[in-house]
Length: 279
Image (cartoon, rainbow, N blue to C red; front, side, top):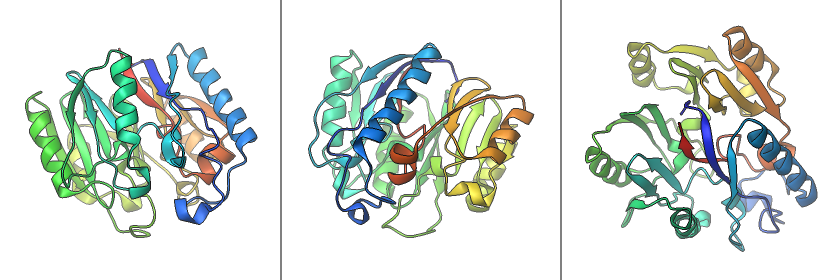
């Protein structure tokens, strides 16, 4: 999660993102497309300035507003891509488009979830190179966990299941990455009130230190932070307490404006990016 970001996939907002019925999508409001594109272009500029090769996921996906949140349809392992299966029905179909784009980029597909399995990238957190934490909730189910455990076992990766809280129920999106972001080798930003105790204890046992997100910055995605390199990270502007705490812990913090692409659509810096290569 924290090695220097070398290649990353993004999707620029198009007409599919400018929904007329935000409630249907769980959005806070209808995004203004022109402003959303300007915000996204600025985000891409930051990523490129930080040395990452930014690749556009340019396939048109009519009717799939959430397709700009490219983190969720796939996960990347040392053995290739895991194509996931979206737990939000409105997002079904993003997986095939992502698989095609990754294969075109030379990333082999190692495995595709199938049957009743559900899992989204926002529920997957690499604790280290050989340990993947998987949040089980409304977007990632038991069959998804089972299939992930089976394929990751072949790569000698241990899977740790994190039971997610109910919070606002199945209509809202609560991913594991809504609650925690790893920003350095042993440093994580967390929203502690919702982090399950066994997982908190597990991370403590691994030597992690925590930066706590205050309650008022949880809704503005203070816990959704993208590591650009160890101790260097990108977060949504408007979370000054969390930013100051990160800086006090020795992190270099960059911010981006995301009124349309993040606050309305509900996806932060991690959600808007699909890292392909870290080295």
